[in-house]
Structure formats: C-alpha cells, structure tokens
Image (cartoon, rainbow, N blue to C red; front, side, top):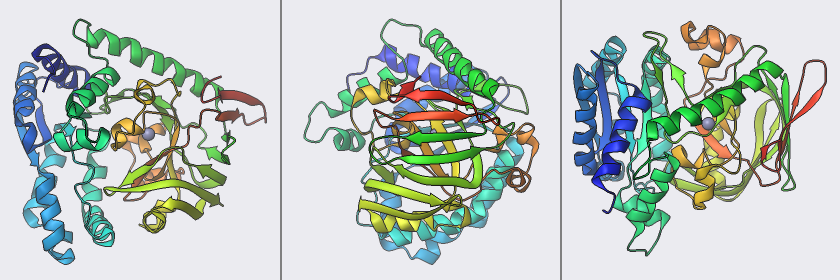
Length: 409
Ligand code: ZN
C-alpha cells in the first residue's frame, strides 16, 4: 500500500469531522471490514478526538457472508435473531452517529443462488425496515470507502498496482491531496451543489422530461413542494450538518410514486446483489416498470422489480454532470457509492421522506400519502448519456432546459 500516512490521516479526519460530523458526547457505530482494522483504529481515534462518548465497531467479513450463503439454509439466514433485534432497538434509543466503510469484493457472492440472496434480503429487510425508518433523519451517518485487494483487482484485473490505482481514484473523488486542505475543498464543493439545488427549488418544476439518442424518452412528475437536496443533510435531533456520501456529486429528489411514463436506457452496468446487469432498459407505464430488457442479467432485473410492491416504482431522480470526478476516472467501481456519482441516475424503490416539508417528522406511511415511494430496495441505475437532455416543466407549462449534452444547461 502506497498511500501516505499523511493522506490516510487526512482522509480519516475528513470522514469523521466533515462526513459524520461527530459531536461531543455522541455514541459512534462504525461498520467496517475486518481486513481494514488498521484504518478502523485510525477512525476510532479521530472519533474520540472529536469528543465521542463511545465508539462501537460492527465488523464485516465478506467471506463469512459467502460461506453462510453457500452452506446455511435460506430459512436459517432469513431469521433476524432476538439479539440482532435487541441491537436494532438499542440503536433506535442511542441514535448513534454511523460510519460505514465499504471495501467489499464485488465478486464475493459469485456462485451463490441469486434467489436465495434476494429471498433472505426480502425476509430480513421486512423485519429491519421499521427500525431503519425509526432512525431516519434523526442521526448522522456517512458512507466512505477503503480499497481492499479483491475490490481493486476487480476494477484493475491483472495489474500489480491495482490497489494504488484504486486509492488514487478514491482520493481524487473525495478531494484529498498531499498538500491541500480537504475540509476547505469540501466547503467549496458543497456550496456549489447547494446553490444548484436552491436554483432547482426556486423553479418549482412539476415534471421532468429526459431524452437521448440511445432511446431514453421519459417523463416523471415531481411532488409539489418537495425539495431538491444535495451534498449535506441535517440531523433533526441536534441540528448537526453531515455528508452521507463521500464522494457525493448528486442533487436529488423523490418523484411522485406511480407517475411516470416512457423508457430509461441505462448507460452503465448495474451491480446488484453482487451480480451484474448489463445493457438494459426499463419501460414504465402509469408509474410502474412494466417491462425491461437486459443483454445480461434479465432474470435478475425482473426479480429486482418484483421484490415488493414499491420495487417497480421510482424513489429517486438525481442530477450529476458528466464532468464528475468519478466519471473522469473512467472505470466502473462496482460500488454504488462511486458509480451513482458518475452521471444522472434514477432509483427504483424507496424514496426519501426528508425531501418533503416536515418530512423528517413523518412516518413512512404519512410520507407515502404525499407521494413518496416505499420499498425494501433502493437501487440506482445510470441514465446520464453524453447527449442527455433534461427539461424542467413548470406548472404553467413553461419548459426550462436543465441539462444539455449530459451537463448543466
Ligand atoms: Zn442517488
């Protein structure tokens, strides 16, 4: 590993201070792979320096997950055990500041029956969801990445410098260099995103229209009064500003569930449940995905759309210009945290209730009445073609160009 001690320390500090914004007296829950134990120690130290009361670590190990899926029964894996539920209950009580470090091998679940994977996810998701809903908007969280050997090898096959290359790319996208001040860089970056979001909010668009040469021709209705958001979020319990994703380039909102028409053509492969769906498109009628076709992963895509009632409807539309540093890296990361920040995307499944005025204090059921979609899945797929045009349509019918040729008009 060739990343310098200096950069690593700056990165850890950025995640804790700017990303999670750990406040004095807070409990922190760090979720990280066992192989990244040295980085875990660095993060713990930064959390305590920021005043954390206690730092707990949830260790993940993708080999353990793989072996369990290969050898244990679906019914066994589907069960959420009482101690796991006790932990979730404790989390609702503590509202810990959560830090997730992703580093998984994208191929970790190769050879595992996809039906078993999605079946277990469906069963566990149903039990876990109410706890997830109970903490939403009420705690700070951040997802950042650390390159593992296997992840790097997937991005750069047969390259002995794979890990270094993935490090370079990650540091570029999170704006850390040997001699810059990443905290100041992030302030500039989040200000830019927030200005764009403010402009979109002033326009009050009631719908968007997407078109591009590849066959994308799609209209979607927006929720009146729902906000466009980007970069940061505020914990409604303590007012702390935090940045949920590092990197982040997107400005997003949740459209009206069940009100869209037309076809979206994906411009990048989608990695779902550790498997790839390639060269695909999804066609919507009356707001629901009614058909899809994929050169690879057709059955997987169909299964995804049928996960539950909300899985066939959109939960998110997001704007990302094609000049995004993630896109400039020019390779697929096999990790949504990065790939969704490459260009414009939409997501099937759960929407974000916090985009509604007063949404933080709503239950998911209340948010659904206002048009927010609910589902156990939230899967982003990229539609930002180089020639993508997006128009915003105001309630009086005025058409305003938002994107031209894949970037801000
Ligand atoms: Zn997104």
